[in-house]
Structures are given as structure tokens and as C-alpha cells.
Amino acid sequence: MQYIMKGGTPLAGDVIISGAKNAALGILAAAIMTDESVIIENLPNVRDINVILNAMKEIGVVVEMIGDHKVKINGANIHKVVVDNAHIKKIRAGYYLLGALAGKYRHAEVALPGGCNIGSRPIDQHLKGFQTLGMDTVVEHGLVKVDAKRLVGGHVYLDMVSVGATINVMLAAVLAKGSTTIENAAKEPHVVDVANMLNTMGANVRGAGTDTIRIRGVERLHGTDYSIIPDQIEAGTFMFAAAVTHGDVTVHNIIPQHMDAITAKLREMGCEISEFDESIRVVGKSQLKSCNVKTLPYPGFPTDMQPQICVALSLAAGRGVVTESIFESRFKYVDELTKMGAHVKVESNVAVIDGVRRLTGAELNAPDLRAGAALVLAGLCAEGITTVNDIEYIMRGYEDFDRKLRELGAVIELVDDEAEAKKFRFRVG
Ligand code: UD1
Image (cartoon, rainbow, N blue to C red; front, side):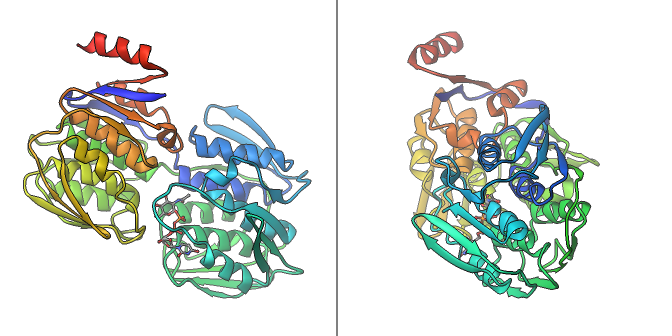
């Protein structure tokens, strides 16, 4: 399977953004912490979500799709707390099942997390938090095992701002005895979304969205009906798609405030942005201007948007410097961009990009989820035909990526084999 595209068409029109994958992963884990049924709406239909739903089914959770983007979860009959299926190792957020199961049953074993290969991704902060709540933790035979006689609230100071550790500790702490404080907590919108969802289940979580989260443990959680926030990164990717193709795209179903860092950079690069209650319109000027950017925890510029802005800088006038401060090996896709004629020099965690007038189509491999999407953006503004292989990565986090792009006028198709690719080439000339 690959995406094949012909670049050069300015994208125009409206696109509806799906629910946030990274919020959904935490929220699905939270949903199994009660024996009552939980309904989750605005669930994105992407592969990472299917992986976690399947893992949940294997331990006895009843998962019932009651709409395209709506699921009913019941965790009353969980019969094992060991999550070790082949797929869960491939996603990062399987570890949320540790916090959720340990909170509910005081014991859990989950296969060590995988996820995108964008640098070393330790889980020491998760384990430190669990230990503070009274758990013994051990990693053996590829499993992270946590165990506690009782969970007690405590004071957790995270050494670095970690989305995963913040959510995982929060999950376990809502059912611990007494109060927990998480300091230096991540402030990402999906941290707030998981906290809000837990509160609708009867939890007592305060301060999510600031760097201090206070949780007062409760005896039990109950069922709820909760709708997931829109995906900030999917929205940002389409906003950059508008910018690089000199298009005119409105992203709908979003929370504009979550997009502030992205909107600011697009304005700096010369795009015209209009904000509405639940949508943002991006008009890309014919020549983008370069800028410098450093990835930072929210509300800074997200690391998950770093490859997309690098593509835009590849085509901007002047030199741009991109500093990646979250993950150390997140520039692997640069070799692919170079094949298209981009001028990018990477040294350690800094990329220096000298904008070129045009990119040219090439055969590319997606190295990870966000970089894969960024390479598609590059293909959509390059001259000629571009193919992107290994698109399973992209499907992990983008719902119907090619369909949404086609609806904006992009000439792109998902093809299964060389024969279909040939047909595409023949058709688009
Ligand atoms: C989450 C997102 C991912 C995003 C990242 C940063 C999910 C499923 N994934 O990943 O898309 O790129 O946030 O916004 O939500 N760290 C440690 N020890 C730990 C935990 C983290 O050293 O125990 C380090 C990491 O190596 C990294 C930094 O902290 O350098 C931030 O990682 P973290 O926020 O935890 O990222 P994830 O939750 O894995």
C-alpha cells in the first residue's frame, strides 16, 4: 500500500477534523475503570485506536461500536490484567492500561510500549509516579508489571514534562486513597480532556491544563457519555497543507485556542488566518517567509508538527532554523525531503533549512506517523509524481487522510500495487 500523488494543485475548501487520537487513547483506558457502561463519542477511526480496543477486548472488556465514531465500553467483566498482544507493543499509549488497571485492580502487566521511532522513549517518570502511589514496579520478559496492596495518594514531581506520565499517574491516582499532586505536569489539551472525562465519571481532578494537578481519590467511578476533543495535530497538518500548496482551506470542528502556536507560526510565514468559533481559515500566500521555531511542551509549538513546518520552510524564502527539544531523533525524514530537492542540514537536534523555489516528486518512505503526513504535504506541492510508502504509519493517526485531501482538490490516491499506481500515472498524465 502506498499514497501516490501529483503535486501542484492548491487545496481549497472545507475539512472536518476528527477526534483527538492521543486524547482518545487515555479516555478509552479511563473508560474501563468503572463497571458501568461508558459511551465515548467523536472517536477517531484510526489504527492506534483499533489496537487499543482489541487489546481491551482480549482482557474481557465489552466493546460495542454504536456509530461510526461512537463506542460503548463496559469493563465489568475484565478477567485478566495482563495485556500482551502482538499489536499493543507497536503503539505507545498501551501503557495507559497500566495506570487504569492498576488503579482499579491494584495489579497490571502490560507489554513495553513501542510507538514511533523518534528517539529514546523511556517510561521512568510513569514508574516513579506509580511508586509514589505505593506500587512495586518491575520490568521483566518485555512486560512492565505493577503491583500494590493499596494505592495511596502522594506528591509526584515529574523531572520533565511528560504527557504520558501525567495521564498515567492521573489515571491511577483517581482511585487511590487520599490526595495526589502532580507537579511539572503536562498541559496539553488531551491531558485536560482525560481529566474532564474522569471528572464526569465521578473523579475529583483539579488543575489540569496548569502545571500542578491535584487529585482527590474517590471510592469508585461511574458510567458517563463523553465526547472527545478535536485533534489539534490533524487540524495543524491540514492548515500547513493549505499553506504549502498556496491554498485556501477552512478546518472545522476544532478548538481554535488549541491551535494558537501553529496559527502564530503560519501568520509569521505570511499566511492569512481567520479564526471563528469552531473553525480556522488558512489562505496560503504564493511565497512563504522563513522563520525559526523550537518545539516545546504545550502551549509551545508541538513536536508532532515539526516535520510539517519543516516542509513549509523547505519552500519558504530565506533560512529557517528548527530546534527539536522533545525527541532527539525526529529528523529522520529529512533524507526523504532531500530527495525532492530540499536544502536541509541537520546537526544533532537542529535543522537549518534554506528554502528552495520548488520541490520535485520522488519515491519516499514514511519513517513515522507525523513525518509520513509531512512527506505527503511535500508531495502535494512538488512538481510531478510522488509516492509515499509505509503509509501504515500515517493510518495510525489520520482518519481517511487521502479522502479528506481529495475533497480539498488534491490529486492523491491510496494504491495497493504497481498496477494501480500505473493506472494513476496514466490518468493524471
Ligand atoms: C505524547 C504523544 C506524542 C507527542 C508527545 C509530546 C501520545 C500517545 N503521544 O507522547 O504524539 O509527540 O506526547 O507531545 O499522547 N520522557 C522520559 N521519561 C518518561 C516519559 C517521557 O524521559 O517516563 C521524555 C521523553 O523521552 C521525551 C519527553 O519526555 O523526551 C516527552 O515525552 P512524553 O510527553 O511522555 O511523550 P509521550 O507521552 O510518549
